[in-house]
Length: 633
Image 1 (cartoon, rainbow, N blue to C red):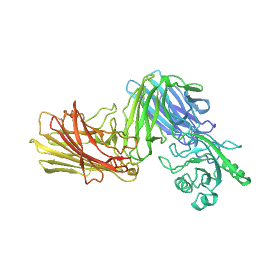
Image 2: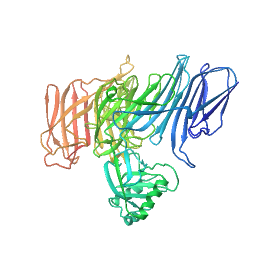
Image 3: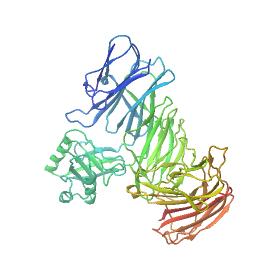
Image 4: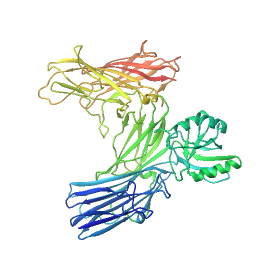
């Protein structure tokens, strides 16, 4: 028989763009996804039975040549019984609007709509559609219920303080800008400045327009505003307000972590009105803005049944999980890439489509929906080639309060961690093979995945002083003799390329581990005695210390899933300002805790490298040199 499905957007037109339709037969677990591409209908030849219909509909901005999506709609029919030729109309105009409200002023930075349909205790069909901050409306309609299995629709939101609460002409109209980024480069606080027309934003045009301390109106060729922003900054401007001839909303781009100066875009009509005002006299703009939101909301709002009509989800801080987070930089104030994920019990894994950032160093209050949604977080000091520091996956209870610290301490290699944040296996012996795969970088609670072009390293294995294996990577597997031997494993790692611009601490780390190993024919896997040094130093958010004497650095070690360290039996630490001349620090032990005392009086502005030698009660040793572990301020 024939199933005909018509997919209609909120403008009443056949759905186009990224709009998609899933038709899934739950009797035989078959189906397909089609992109509608403006078709009047989608026609299927199907057998009688139960079907799940699911669609995402994107409605573009009004007007010819519109580039941005105005709204995103989910339309679901969890179970439709087909017995004859049938026509189904999935009309986005009949869906209800979804909104959020909180105790604090918020705007949605990223929103994802997701569904999941399970049946027969075996099958799952799920999907998501991600929408960024330029989408002006989210809608949903779910008709009917799943009689066989389960169905869930949910909207997921990342929201923070509005980037620009108001931008207007003093004594004139309100403007409707879109920021080129979500980072620290944006306008902040309240202010005002004259507006000048700087043509296309060349250095010569900016100088002629009197760009210093002004907002510069610039005609852009495309969305790339990085060069214009840099030119405007060099000219002393406060901000770039970009426009183009093509009508409609549009977005600029100044880099994944922002640009040299606040950059905003407005449509052609608003730009024309501003230029007309400038032609008759001076124009001043005023604004209210918040570049770095002191809070962020991560919300999961699931619905198990029908979804009809509009709904505003009002969340209260007291009903959410709350985390006070501290973000440390790697020596340079920067915006770190900040990504979040949500995970539902039914099997949906949800991510957000837009790039978000968080200022480092900085602090932020973070709210999460409580209940059975698990959350995690990933941070990168540089995108797209930098490492990704990964947080644990966890749920929250109402009113729960936690703290989190990122990129703290002296950064170096650590054991990998699983989704629960537990240390996993870093080094083992299987038969006559020794394998080593740590996390290249880590802090006190997180381990990072290395960057594809920003992190390099090598590995060398010695037995009795002789090289038995080498790798051009900071991990590897080596064949060794069965007999007992003393091994030295040396790893060298460093940060290179563009990611190194904001990674000015722990720029290179060389670590040598000493352990004893022999074949145990009865053991499938033998964990190796690998110690990861840990340092506790009085570092600030940019990893600097005071120029003073008598600073204490705590010394310790962690292991991995294959080895629990014994108590430390000896510890040495030395420090250097040039990497050649080293000063031995006084080391002491009290109650099983080891510490070293360093003197930095008169060393303001100097980088400090550390060298440590540690031995535990089981005979495992580690020697580590960290280049530029911190600076003296």
